[in-house]
Structures are given as structure tokens and as C-alpha cells.
Length: 630
Image (cartoon, rainbow, N blue to C red; front, side, top):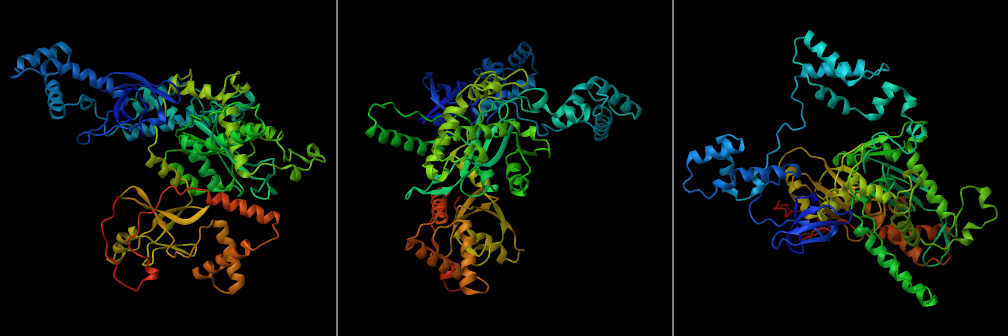
């Protein structure tokens, strides 16, 4: 991750620059380290600083000022050769430090000649309590029995009760700050419910627009699915193919839409994971092809409407970062282990919406209502109920394709919804509140600063981390997942471990359900994924939904246990039937559009060039392990 905090040294156009100030969500004020020139640069144009020497630990932003202060302590002594002890002692008395401290700082600086090395090193036990376990047990007991009660004692009263118990047990007395930190670590919602009752946890009814724990941007992000109130058409015949589904994520504090995913497939873990990954990543790569499509549309419109010569809008969506908590309903895709494990990887807490208490999803529900209202003005809308639809022929009126609806939603979220005044924000825009919360803070929370910018490699890994995962073993033929075999020579060292008599280990692989042409094998030691392609090159690219159809077709043709060659033959047969089909039905058009959407997905990683053919195509031979290039 690229730290964008003031004082961090980064790279811009092959030059070292230091961040001076976080100007806004899209630009930083930086200082050229060589010329001293100040300039504003785009966030996405920055890269990691080029290392010129050995690895030097970068100090935390909070320690940079301390490093400069320590350098001032020793600066007058650096040019003294020889350096008498009396001079060091005099300087130590002058700055209020010990002689040993100055000698230690001199040694550190003269070995590295970098001011940053003078920063304090983080404690190895940072974040861990140094209290005795017996004292912590007393603190937890008093908090549980007294503080979390309807009597609602203050922190001071709770601290007094803890000290009385500790004195009785002849234990050391904890400070009030220690007790306060222990209380603040509790869930705000649980704390309020235990002390004030269930009704007090209904902020949507008591206080308009408030939500427990959402004091800063991305503290809480709500995610939900819905089927859109609009019919779309296929790209070629322009005939109706049905209604798509959307998954949307909204930041509760600012009401800014942070990500979305649209698909013709029913909601699943894939929908939730794709939406969350897009929410966490900068949007430049996502917006680039849509901006090109928008420019092309404007150019075409001007051909037959020359009076409309306005330029296309520039799509801007400067929202990214890791949410602290995601708030979801109790749908199966949100309750599954896959989402929980992926979120744990990034320190994201998954909180399920309380059952039969819909006001806890009020922000996302209101957004869904706003989306539906906007769609009701488009041709092909189904409206929200049959009474409103009346005799309106949604299927005949439909004109938007899947890609056109995707572009419309992108423009709406990035250019309209996030940019227009919101009644729940006292007339401010979501993007302005998001920016102020990050850069200026509020009465409830200090400023967070811009979230770290992921490098391209980290962005690709994040995308894969939110794909469905499976546990597999590495066999002689490679990896077999749902009848399909995958192989690449990077698996050879893992196979060699098994051949040496060690037990067969299980490894994590992930795959994109829209594209089964490769799976992503995670090497724990290297900390990276490898893309493993089909072992049999006869396969054509397909999705998991097409694979399920192939299994049904192959079983109907063969009538017994289906093997991989049977599926390949079924795919070849199915492709010929589709190619020669003359009667295009609604279902076929929908499946064709789904397939185009699946095939439009760019693989996050490309397999390394293979030097060996698949073992399925060779005679039996000994596989010799080799060094994997990371």
C-alpha cells in the first residue's frame, strides 16, 4: 500500500517527492526532493519511492517529527572529529537527554546517514495490555456485571468499583484510562443495548441519519442486492432479455456510493465480493473503458444532433479504502464462510442486520428506492408494482443493453448521486461530506487522512482475494476442480513435497465463476497467486453456469458418470447448436448476453509461460522440482 500521509516520500515521474498536504480526494501537494518545488499531482499518478540502498524501515507518520527532533539533538556533534565526551555531555544537558542516548543516536545516524532511521521503533508489545491477567479479569467482570446494566453507572464509578475489588484481592490498581479503553473496545451497539435497552438502538427512528459506530468515512458500509425495475435488450437483435440484478455499497457516514456490481446472474458471494473489492479500490481502471464508451456515444449523437455540441462529462469517483465494518442482511451469500474469510484477510468486520429490525438497513434501503425512482423515468421500466405499470408494455419499450445500463448507473452514482445535495446531510453532497470526514474530521472522530493507495500488484491480489475459494490437493496431473483439470509447472515443487513422503497438504485456490479458463493458486510462502490454466487445451472459455448446463447435457447423452472428455464433447456440441440456431428465443438471447458479460471479464493475472506440456498429454515421467520465479 502507498502511504499518502504528509511526510511520506513517493515517486512521481521518476522523481522523489514528499507529501506536504492532502489537498483533496484526488490531488496531493508534494515537494520535489531535489529542487524543492511544490506542485499538485494526481493521487493515481504516484508510485512507491525508488530504494537506493539497503532496506530501511520507514517510520510511522506520527514518528517523523520525532526523528527530526532527534536529529537536531546530534546535529552540532556530527562535525566534531575528534568528539570529546565533554562536548557530548554539554549537548546532552542542553537538550535534556542522557549522554548514552546521544551516543546511541550518533551511532545509528552515522551507520545509515538517514534521518528516518532516528525514528522510534514501534514496541514489540504495542497494542497489548501490560496489566496482570488477574486485573484484566476483574475489569471485564465489573464491566459485564455493573457497567453493562440498566443502572448505567459512569466510567468513573465503574473504575472505583474495579479498584475496590482489586484492593480487596491485593492486586495492582488499574488507571481510569485503562478501564475507559476496555469499555471503548466494546461494540457501540451492544453497549447501548445493554445499558439503555433495545429501543435505544433504533437511531433511525430516534435521530435522523445517525447510525452506531459510523462517525467517520468507511467506518460502516452497508451492502445489499436487488433486482432492477427495468427490462434490458440484447446488443444485436435489440430484443428484451429480462431484468438484471445489482449489488450496491454505501458509506453510512457520508451517504456516498462506494461501489456496485451489475449482473444477469442471481446474487451470490461473487456479487458481494466483486462489489466490495470495487469499493476498496481506486476507480481509475474501472472508469477508463466507460469514459471511452461515453465519449464515443457523445460523438455519435452529435452526428444527427449537431446542435448538441457539449463535451461529454469526465467521470470522477475519488472514493476508495478499507471499510472497518460492512453491514449486511441475513442472505445466504452474506452469512457464508467465504465472505467472512476474505474480510478477515483485510481486517473487515462483517455484521449481520438484526432480524426483524429493518431500520438498521435504512441507508441502503433508501438508496435502493432512489435507484428505482430514477429507473422509472427510463424506457423499459417495470415500475415498482403492477398498479403503477398499468398497461405500460415494459418489454416492448425496452431499449437499453446491459453495457448501456452499466454505463448509465456509473454516471448516476459517480456524477449525480455522489455530487448532488442530500437531505439527510443538511443539503451537503455525499462526496463533500466524505472528503471533510477524511481530511478535516468531525466532533465525533479525528481526520483519518487519505487511505493508502494500493499498488497494481496489491489491487490484483485484492480482486482475487474476494473470489470464491476452494481447498484442493496437488496431484500428478495437476489440480482437479469440479471435473475440470488444471495444470501449470509452478505446481511441480508442491507435487515434489508430496512425493518425498510428506502427507498431502491442502492448498487454497480461487476462481472467477464467470471465467473458468484458469484458477488462482495461492503460494503461502511467496505470498502471491499463480494463474493455473486448463490442462486440456480443447476447452473453450466458459462460466460456472455453462459448466452446470454441460454436465446436464453430457449426462443426458451418456447416461452414466460424466468425465472431463464428455464435458468437452458436450461443449463442442452445444457451440454448434448455438451457432446454427435460427430461432432466437428470449432465453437464448439472455444466455448469450450473460456469456458476453462473463467473457468481457479481464483475468486479474496471466499464467507464466509454460515450458512443459500438460502431463495429460505426455508419457509417465519423473517430475523434477525446480526453482519457482516469483
